[in-house]
Every structure is written in structure tokens, then in C-alpha cells.
Image (cartoon, rainbow, N blue to C red; front, side, top):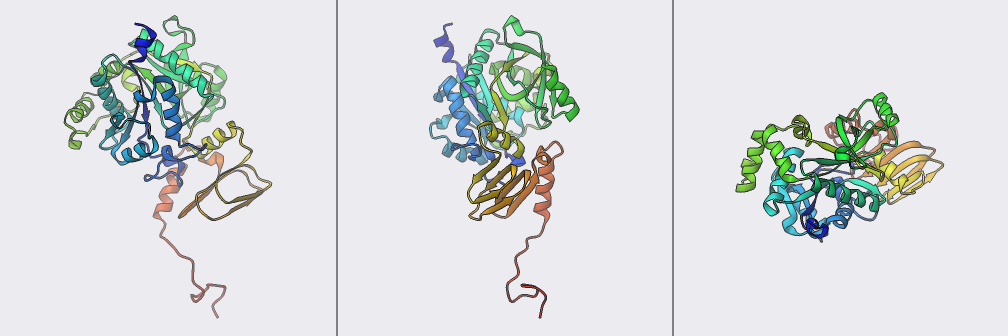
Length: 376
């Protein structure tokens, strides 16, 4: 098959059903991070669409999302064909979402191969990412039973990310290693060891595979989930979409059946915009100064390592702060050390829960007791 013929069977899918809860209070269920302009003039999902469209063409980019965000996807991506939105009636976990869009793709094109990318990554340079995607597609086209994970070379011991241990050479193709072990959010001492070894890579959640191969793995590993999703794909009845059992991580069925997974060693700079510290690092990587302001109304004197996100008309005034994040949105103000929000222990989840449990208060009026000091 010629390269031109192969390109007709190449597709890309953007995962855009998440709630972005670790970027609370700016990212909420009504406006999750993928629809926000966090690291530039375009939303995260727009940036992802443009990157992938440059590889497979805009007409072959699909978006996987849930019913509550389908309209947001359409508004954010005017170049996206309406038929290219694969909608879950409810969030049932990544494996169910993967199965649903794979069923959609195989019905559309039984010979397809697909790139899958999260909607919330920052990548530079884009050309290096796109070249890696093209290499991954060619590898899977020639070795259809393989899944390729694009692995970023870690530049620091980050405990909020997933790692993959990869050795050897996959199918004797330079740059492709064989995945040996997956580790989610390790302890700091282990992350330091991974970075030093040179054999561990960050899982960018950008994958390339043949959808029919993944479906075969899911059918064997999670038959009840497979039947539920496949039934919904045929009937369109949300009541059928109750996946129940889930294999957990989207790659676990492949690992459990010893299906081959390759890691493409990538040299582009990659950030998972999943926490406030990761957003700060991504902005610094773009050449932003140590004191970064997003939004409006910020005045600072002599701070270092400061990220201020202000989504109100108020003016935020800071001075002498170091390695701090300040987030101001209607109803909430978050002030915290950046390193406290790496989220290895769910700090944001705890803060969000405590804020939700706190009763609403209001400022006293001048005629109320203690409005301006001791009552007269």
C-alpha cells in the first residue's frame, strides 16, 4: 500500500470528557479545562485539534466526549464535522470511551489506524510532535498487532505523572522500545530513580493502534463492559450504556494479554496541564517570566515563582511571594504553595470538598453590630 493510500485510513481522536477537577476553582464541571484558554490565545482542545489535524487532516479528527460537553465541543471546534463527535451518554471510564470510539471507527473504516490524544496537553515544538505521530502511524501500519505509546523523556522527578519502563528495540525499528512496566504516580524517591536511569518515560497518553486489535483485547478482558458498550453503539439507548466492570486503565487489557506495546522515545517538550504547578511550568517553558499573570487585574512587587489566575474584575495585589499560586474566580480564592498542589495526595480534592461544605457568609452592613468595630 502506498503512503497516499495509507493516509486515507489514518484517524485521530481527542479525549475531551474529563472534568479537570485538579484545576479547581477555575476549572469546574460546567467549564472544564479543555475549553479554557490557559496557556495561550486558544483553548486546550483547539490546540490539540490543530496539532492532530496537521497529521491526519481535519476531516479525520474525531472527539470523544460525554453528553454534557457535546455542545461545548461543537462551539470550541467549528472545523469539526458534527458526525465526528462520539458521545457517551454518561462517563463510564476511559476503557468504555475507547471501546465506543473504536466501534465507531471500525464501522466507518475496517482498515483504520488511530492516534489518540488527551485534550489537555501542552506540546512544543509542534513539528516534533507531528513527526512522532507520523512515525507511530507508520509503525502500526506495518506491525498491526502493536500499540504505540508516545513517551516523553522526563526532565524532572514528577510524582503527578505516569511512567513506563521501556527496554530493547521493538521490531528492530530505531526509536521504538518495548514497554515492560507501567507505574502510576510514583513516590518521589522512585521518580528520581526513573529520571536518572534513562529507561523510563512519561506516559503522554498519546497512543497509536489499530482499533480492531484493541476491541479484540477488550472483548476478552472485560466481556460485560464490551457487550454493554457494543449494545449502546447499536441501539443508542443510554440505559444500555452501563459498563459496570472496567479494566481500570485503558491499556490494562493489552498488558494482561501480553499484547505488544512499543514506546516511541520522543524529544518534544510535553506538559500535562492537569495541575496548577504543571500549568506554571508549561507557561515558563514558553518563555514567560517568573511572575505570570493570566486574566486581568494583577499588580506585583518583588515576587518569584508566582502564578496568578484572575477571572474577576478585581485587582489582585501581591508582593514578596515565592513559589505560590493565586486563583481568583467568582466565589472562590485559592492561595497555596505550588508544590502543595502537585496532587499526589489529592490536595485539591480535599480543599474543594471543604469549601463546598462551608456555609455561605456575607459581609456585615454598616448598621449591623461589629460592622465597623465594637458595637456602641
